[in-house]
Each structure stands twice: as structure tokens, then as C-alpha cells.
Amino acid sequence: MQRRVVIVVFEGFQLLDMAGPADVFALADLMAGADGYQVEVTAVRAGSVTAHNGIATVVSTPLHRVDGPIDTLMVAGGLTTMEFLPDRELVGGIERLACLSRRITSVCSGALFLAEAGLLDGRRATTHWLIADTLRGRYPRVDVDADPIYVKDGNVWTSAGVTAGVDLALALVAEDHGHRLARDVACGLVVYLHRPGGQSQFSMPMSAFPPRSEPLRELQAFIDANPADDLSVPALARHAGMSERHFSRVFTEQAGMPPGRYVERSRADAARRLLEVTDHPLERVAREAGLGTPETLYRVFHRHWRISPGAYRRRFQAKES
Image: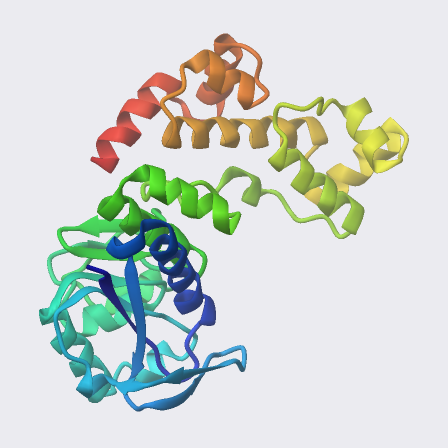
């Protein structure tokens, strides 16, 4: 039988909070066949519900008419979340549907609705890092962890902001059908290969500034996407069409760090991701991350995180389990 997924939205919701997971479930349904997913969208009232970006979604069944059983309840977030928290029809409807659901989830600030309904009391939860203090301050019975991209506590899952909803949905597919299907869905959607929930919302390359120059922004993206390539200053300068001296000066000025340091940080972050999502031996991790040897991997990893790659993998896997 298809697994029924009900996504709750409201006026001004974040479209990607709904559309990202919905596309994950739709592709998983196509790949899994009869054991896939059926997605429904609901709101307090039937009809057109407009996202913050102005795109309207048509709701066929209002919240009070949705009945069980439900496999997965998902509550979207959005910039208007605080405006709708006092809406008893919305919050009460979420609470009622939670009782009919095998699994309860939220994306981004949707965690505030779960907390308002009392569904996060005594649980560990996450949300977009920008509103973590709001969640923590309003709901002291919730154990708020602002770092992970998603958190599972029993049958309740919460995720960080916006695109983290895709990671959450892929994790739900992996729980239901295994990691192979989740990987196939991720590849089909051309998204990152199922980031584990314990991964931080803050990746290392994000700590650098995005350059003002579009060619340098494209070069920065190239570095992050191709850690095993020749990323020496002469090679990058040629790629940018600049002299080495001019390239180093402009990159440092616009990115906030020299190109060599950015490359090392990007490669270290690539190695961290490989340790999180693969069981590759350290030799392969070092090679694919552009660090060459396990010895270099160890030095770079210890310099940035004060921990060995092997210890990080063990600690991360323990956190995930």
C-alpha cells in the first residue's frame, strides 16, 4: 500500500518546505511502485493558499476534514509562522492529525507549530538556526539543538530551514525503503546524496564570503564541487584568466581568505562529508577530497576540528545511531 503523507501549509508558507519533500516522495513513489507514497496538502480552508513567493497551491481538503490513518504528517514553515501560531484551528488541527499519524515531522519554522501543539515537549528538536532562540525561549520544555540539519526523537522528526526539508524527506524514504532508494531519488533530483541528520547546518565553505565578482563566485563553486582537481594557485589563476599575483589579491580581498586557505577548508569539508555518508577507507576519502594521503587528511582534519578522521567517523556514527 502507498504511504500517505499529509503536508500542512498556511498563507505565506515557504514553498520549498512543501515542494521539496513532495518531490522527494513523488519520485520515491515512482521508483518504489505500489509501496510508494501518496502526498496530500491541507490547510485550514480549502482553495488557494499562497506561498510567501506568491505562488499559489490548491488545497482540496480542509484540515478539519482530513481523517486517518496517516503515515507521515509534515508541517511546513514560513515567514508568517509567528502570525499563525495563535490560530487555534491550525494548531488544533495539527494536534488532532498527529494523533492519527505514525510519524510526525516539521520543516524549518514548522517546528514552532509542533511545539505550540505540545508535540515537542520533552523531545530534542531542531529548526532553522535563525529562529532556534525563539523556539527555545517560547517552549522551554523542548530540547533545542540548532546545529543538525534534522533530528529524530522517537516518531517525531524536525528539520532545519528550507532545503533541509529535502534531506529530511530523503531520510524518511531511507527509513521506509532503505538507503539505496534514497540515493536513487537524490540522484534523480540532482541533490546532495542524502546528508545525514547529524551534519551541521553550517558547512565550512559557508564561513568564507561570497565574492562580489561573478567569475570568482563561479570559481568558488568549482572548488567546492571538484576537491580532487588541481586547485593550486597557478591553476586557479589560469581558470580565472588572471595573473597569479592579481588573482591571489582579488580572491583574498573578496572571499576574506587567501585561495590556498579556502581550498584547504573546502577539501576538509569534503572529507568530513565523505566520512559522514560513506564507509570508504581513509585512503579513498583522502584521495577523493583532494588531500592525497591519510597523513595529510589527518593533519588537515586535526587542524580544523581537533579530532582524527577515524574518531570523527566513530563519533558521528554514534550520534546518528
